[in-house]
Length: 183
Length: 145
Image (cartoon, rainbow over all chains, first blue to last red; front, top):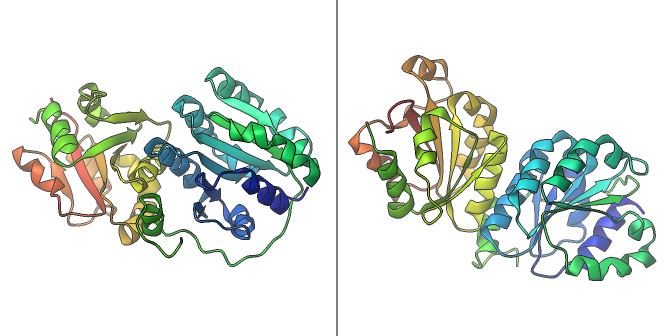
């Protein structure tokens, strides 16, 4: 499945009150096509993950950060921070465009560190190989407990959309239930 | 000398800074030593950028937060802070530790003229309630006891 479709299908699995942080330009473009009130777009992927973790600290809502394998491999600090956070409402979804289990292979030490720190790691690649299979993972997503890293193997996609990076003030207003144009 | 416990109480009780994040900072180690769970939540981070992201995230949910960092790390995140200053209103405090006046001079290009210090008993003025947005406050090594 192409990454933009995988993002669409994953968003469909979530509840309306789940927070999504789309990180990095490609993920932002693709997620914007399926925009919803609690999806926020942070182009700077070096800050997006830790910002998501911060949101998880400040709210009881589930926070899902969508990123690519390149982001996660270049920001290993965050992966360790995710593990030690012990936050039950933070989930990092990695859309892996590399072949097969390459991400798992290249980051084996990180994966084992995460495992030792008490984080869960799941590979949803099989569920996301065909659209018809995705529904079967919905039950699992609904009972997920963080901190969790989910790997989804996808094919690269080139999608354009006129997304606008989320303004922090708007984000604060939305999260704190103040009236905004976003809703 | 300033009592670290009093500074903490000032930040947490008077100005509602309840979330602290950052790498280990020598100038602020007394502050960390006096932290208690009932007063605040402290998350040690592996990098300063992580601390900024975490604090910003917590901040966006409505809690005032503090990033603790060394002055040498300021260069790494300064452009980001400058950007935040323009578009951000929620109080977000950066407590910057430095070792000596010489070190401060090394980074003078990064620090604007309105720099604030925790240096004597008047430090409470640095955290005035009507000051919104991102603030940098400098703490010299050895000033806290």
